[in-house]
Amino acid sequence: MANHPFEIDAFVLLPDHVHCIWTLPPDDGDYAMRWNIVKRLVSQATRNDIVPLLSASSIKRKELGLWQRRFWEHQIRDDDDFARHVDYIHWNPMKHGYVSRVVDWPYSSFHQYLRNGVYPENWAGTAECDRAHSARCDFGEME
Image (cartoon, rainbow, N blue to C red; front, side, top):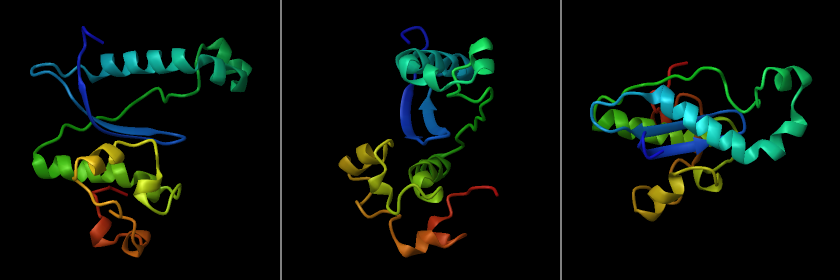
């Protein structure tokens, strides 16, 4: 990764997808190269656990099954856009019903933000977020 540095500003890893915010060096917008590197390293690290679960066609195509072929990127416009996307990333496990409180999902940068005092422990872990389209938990998601 030394040749393609980046910082991970926020992330959440879910059973079927991942969300993250990266900061790349100035004048370097090559997200695709970094995704390829991340996919390769994670696939190598988990190969022994994943390969027994794959179908014959996936093995033939050398697809590990962890990754979609595509990704969607969004360039953060300003501080409000950044904050809204960080909130959405951290709220995502609740959105998909994996937990009833954000703090209960271990595979997220929420815990680092919590330690740094950005969020209270009960952030988004209230009944208001259980209701669809609640203004309190509207993180700008397009449906």
